[in-house]
Image (cartoon, rainbow, N blue to C red; front, side):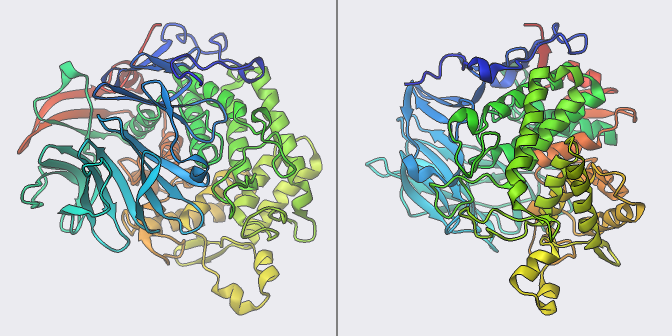
Length: 634
């Protein structure tokens, strides 16, 4: 049995490029520890080790106690799923049936019963709650189910079914300890949309927005009567904060934030990187669930961006750790190389029809490899020669891997025809093409450089515009012609969605010589149009499709920001701690702009009263003293 109570060790091959402080700016050695006092968490910035409650590991995701039981969730480099142990004994979460699903929240009750959530990316795309490895609850596609609490007698969930209000639901545990399938609705949120919920006995505290109020705020709801009244604090920046015990107020601790655009950008970027997923604990992950391509790649870009703008060695140290572990998660060093999955890639399991199949999709590889190259370039000498060589080799290997999929007639890449994927053999979508062009751009082969520029030119050639700015579609015209050449079919194809558009723009922005002033103006106009919808953004660029916070533009959109976009990011936006949004804040941060930042901790009971205020006039002052984390000598 692998021990989770020892620092994770790497072979010489995986440890190549272990971070050193020799190339870091002065001060790196003086502050070699990142500490989160309220969480009892410590990160050694030299080794990358994360320690919590006496447990140490490179990728230690959770350490929590439930009564006398200790839950530990951790990964080794390249792991598809974390190893979960209770009191030192490994618990299986669902065996092979877990493959093909994204793992969610894990909770342990005092009696030792373990529950976890998982969401499927294929099949019926349902979300399930499993208790001790057995499915107890299932929620249909389109339903958001969040596990809030699991105890000896109940499971509390926040459930939002498509088109219906959110509900706080209780599932009691029977005499045999099993979770009942029959829900008991404790609270219907009606016109309110809860973003974060804290339960203290019969009192529910929620950060949420309600349709009859102009802004989000903190609400106190007595569950004995279920009445949602006016917020105890109305401020879009409000959020709950966990403080070290000596600093906690008598009531619920609530934080408000104000400041200049630079102050707000830095605040949300720095806390998103250093106070959440602290120590880059998901960098060990394989890409089975897309954690490398859709989480770690953006976080690495954000770390590199803040290092480039501040020179603070904490960002460089965490970026190096991220690079090292992402390379250690490649299929080759983890024995997963096949004819379809190259040694230099990161294969996924969530996209295949058959969950036993792994696929190395071009878009995922380009997202990961491009972030590695960008970060290494920014770190300069801080990206060791060994790491830089590995990244260069990875780019060349991936270019060779997908060369047989290049269609010279179309001038675009196809999706591999031999994989278990519903669009196999098709001309790939534009976000795949542009991201792959970004990978080819810096390779030494002049033919590949020319190809990368040609792909971008083809992308722009298919753009159109209306009175609200630039428009483009998900599929290239040649992909649609493959399936049905009729003009009516092509005309009926919907425009690109905001999420995939951001992926395309992330790499398109690297081709500054090909992005004209007209392109920039068209994109900024499109951003302005989308932002007129508030937080509930329509899915598609032209305003069509369902509306929701998940479509709020972030990621690559931040490389071509309009004034309205900058203004909106001078405060909290939907998904404020999601990886692409954290990157957007880091990307927008201007270190030369006026920096002002004020944090006010409030004590909330029936009303909220100020408890303590922190004021900063520079990012350096924030890094030196804030209520979230500390940097100190080892």
